[in-house]
Length: 260
Image 1: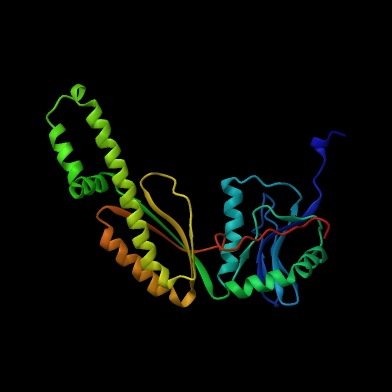
Image 2 (image 1 turned 120 degrees about the vertical axis):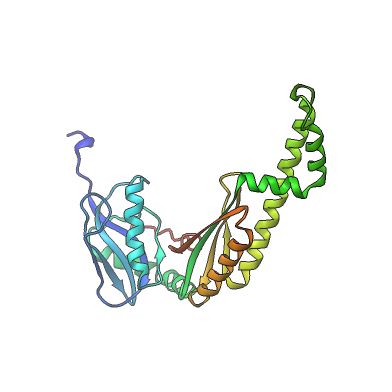
């Protein structure tokens, strides 16, 4: 028989780890088209949230990512969650295999849960409004304003070098401004954060792409500072503030399911 027609073996898809001793069942919301039941497997007060799944590599497609995230969101309504890497599947199709995984990594899970207890991840992206930020640069930097004024009424074919030069000056000013505003925003939010992860920007108009780990009780104060910053700089910036997120930026949990 062709390998293409072979039916994959069954395993257990692992979504996340929580501290819990009671039975838990989230219903038929599992990964894949089958919508398997998502439930908890517990060993000594630590629970892995799992569902039955064929042992395959799930593609990082939107529908699969959303399914994975929805399970994590359900867990986060009640628990501190250690999110497990997408498409982590135990090779065992029974709960005893999951219990052995928890037993093997028990100390790691216990320490990570203790570290993250009572904390949440919040996301903040800040983007410059292109027209407004360039207008503010021209207004602020006298050398750019003067040179631009000289070139306004001169023919383009006679001022190529100067126009290239002014473009370079504006680009450098934009870099300085975005760095300044990034530092200013982080400095305002740092006192309310347990940790900060600065992620790569994905456009030249992006000032900040960051995740903040905060204590649950700090969230109202953190919200207020973000709102104050948005009001202060909203004329030429857009603040995209995301509520409670899975702790992916602060938890790097890779579970070795081989040979367990």
